[in-house]
Each structure stands twice: as C-alpha cells, then as structure tokens.
Length: 408
Image 1: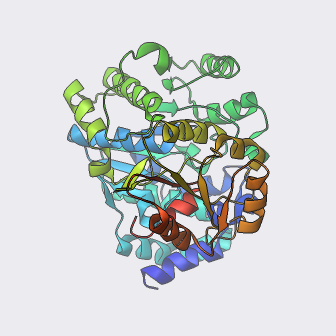
Image 2: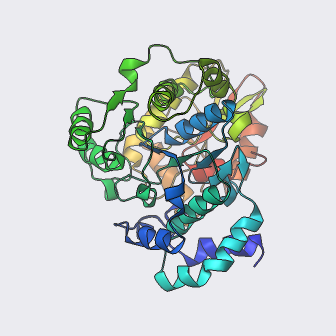
Image 3: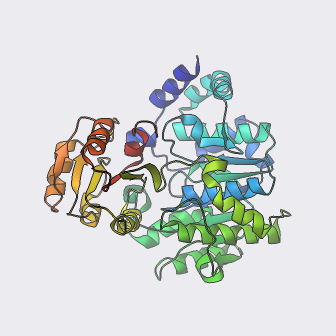
C-alpha cells in the first residue's frame, strides 16, 4: 500500500476516537502492553516527558519540544489529533515522520494489528515509540490522547509528568465532576517521579496532592512557583498558564534529569514554537485586512478565554465561522459567544460533525444569528467575501473545522 492507502486503512479499519467517538474508547491498557511487548518495548529505550490536561496539553507539548530543540537536543514529539495529515502526530525536531516509515510499519505489523483488534490510537502510539527508539531521540514529549490513567500512552515511565489543567470534557469517559476528571489525569503520576501541575482549583488540588503523596512523588504547582511568564510566538491569552508550566517543567528537568537548558534557550524556544514544531491552530492569524484568527478551542474553559480575547480586538464588525461535533454540550458553550456577530454555521466533513440546521437552531435560542453553509470551506470563503478590511473573522468550535480551512 502507498501512503494514502495505508492511512485510509488505518482510519477506516480500526476504531478511531477522532472520527467515531465513544465506540473507539478502550478502558484498559491490555492492548498497548501487548503491542509494546510485541515491538520489543521501544518505550523503555526513551526518556520522556508525559503531558496530560483538559486544555493546553498540545501547546505545552510543542513549547517543551521547541525549548529542548533550542538547547540542541534531538526531540521526539507525539501529539493528537492531527489537522491535515496523520504524520503531524509524530515529529522529530519539527519534521513529520516519513510516509515510508508509516507504510513500512503498517505493512510489517498489519496482520498482528488485525489479529489483536488494536485501536487506531494504540497503533499510532506504538508507531511513535518504535520511530523515536529507532531514531535514538534524546528525549520524547508524549501527549496523552484523552484522560490519562487508561490512555495508551500511560505505559511509559517518564522523567516528569505534567498536568496542565482540569475542566469538564469527555465526561462520558472521565466522569462528570472536576474531581473525577482530575483523578483520571492524575493517573499519569508515577512512583517517585516528579509531577508539574499547571493550574489547579480548590477541588482538584487535593486530588493531585493525595496521588503524589501516595506515590512519593515531588509535586510542583507552576502557578505558585513561576512569577513571570516569558514571551512567546503563541499569542493566545490562555498560553500564559502554559508558558509557566513549561518553565517549571524545564526547571525540574534541569534539577533531576541530567539535561542542561539555559534561560536564553527557554526564552528562544518559547519565541520559536511555530518555527521549530510547526504547531497549527492556536490563535493562528490567517489574514490581516480583515484580521482572521482561527483557534482549536472547543470546550467551555478554552472557548471562554478565546471569546474574551476576540472581544478585546478592534473591529467594525465581527464574523464567526462556527462548527462543532455532535457530542458537544451546546448549552455550556453557546452562551460564551457574542450575540453582536454574524454567524456562518457549518458542519465539518466528519462522522461526528453536528448538522448545520441543528446548530443554527440551538444558536438562535441563545441569540446567535447566521446562515448555514454546505462546508467549512464555503462558510469561510463567504465570511472573507462579506467582511470589510476593518472587520474581524474568527473560525473555530472544533479541531475538525480548523482542519478544513483552505490553505491553513
């Protein structure tokens, strides 16, 4: 199979949360243990930082990778989901895994994947571990897919565990209280392994403290220890907490793990995240006149910060291109959007996309008025055509919407 055929098989033959939702969720680590044993346990050859959290874990992972690249290390980076191409998930020093490596990996192990009914995510994690070990990276940043305790990435024994923040998301899997979500995320904390917490609340802090005490792990609350967040090329307001989390994580890495990263390298790394790692969709500017911004924020906590930032912009008229997935709690997110805006409702071309009429009707009940469009691309192009140079266009609501923006 060529690369297109290989990825088509991966996406369509195996359960994949990105496209299928709940039916793809696995509730134990049996399969990933089986796969890693079969592959010769490549994860045991890696030095890792493990990153979990409701929001910010992707940005934090890319920031950490950028800083470590600036310090001269060969850095593996595993994140999810991808926007345009599967290979975005697996990078070394900002370069995507080769199409050939993906094809050869699947070709070599396809019969095993089929025999054991491995999920898409388990297979992707195994591929990342195998690739990073083969390429002998100095360190790998591994982002949790969802949750933590039962996530396929949780087979690793990291140098440091990082939890960015906790909010209610994926409640059908992780529980419907912040304490239950925190418990799932705290599942990545390992015995006598330092853990950095980015943000906490009165409800979540005791969960983290109890888990760290139980496992004899040093715990660091970045928001209490880091006074100044360094500047970054990632300009979303929500990055303030993430930058402090990264700075604290690097301080712990310097202290415990034999790595040496200077303040200058930290500062340079934070200023060159997009250049070094090619991160997409985080308060990303696509145009200037009118100003066009897209962002992957898709839950209450993330969207609240992004919408506040949108409202702080200077514009004559606001245009919002909006699409969501069908399991989104619209009652919690639609009140966050401004009523003084023209909406362009769209459905991402995905099994999980919410149809535009349902979205339009729900939005209207919250005072959000707009027109439905047949695709993200058409909605986006319509907004660009309608806007004057003094206007502001925002595109968001889902990773899938961002993925379908033309020429992202």
